Length: 115
Length: 116
Image (tube, rainbow over all chains, first blue to last red; front, side, top):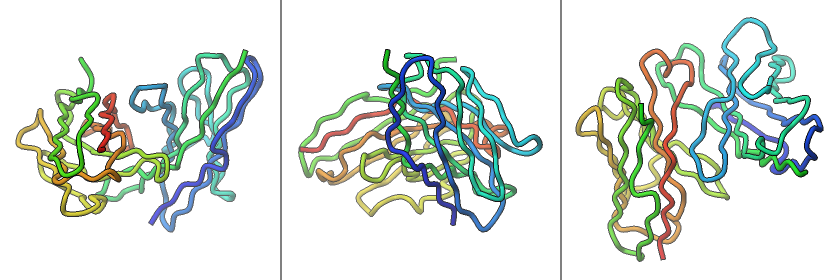
């Protein structure tokens, strides 16, 4: 089975500051990795994904994430945040090559950007 | 495209009543997922369908919950009888055949269920 741990439930930052949201996963098989974002009162939307290749992946709205296999981590970063980045961010995994396409999500990190 | 459509957006009911949540996936998407989101347990997959057939229902909490997908454009999640602990936001998501193996799911806005 797979599990995802998001180490911070809440991260408050000031506008234009850098931010890192941490994600660690556990799996006995190889996985794909994802970050989804949920703006207030909306459904989740895909922010970025790591499937293979370069361990640094770029997503929408200036976010990027780095896959570290040895540390089983997939941390999300942005060099300068905006008020509009206030949202909940979910890290997720799915099994590579399996026939079951379910996603396993972490519990989420609420990013609050203050002026 | 209108995206994934869910109805109702809010539902308040009393314990013991039947509740039916509805979902219309994006046209052409043949994977449909039902999730439940609570503060305590986060986002949990309840069940998912491929081509209207349930593939994984291991997350369905108990017999009070049932889900159907009678055709490619409609699915329901039913709770009968409802209990206060079922209070949550229920999301429906859909994926294309190309996107599903790579985790690309499109979520609806959710139904906020409150059971009194």
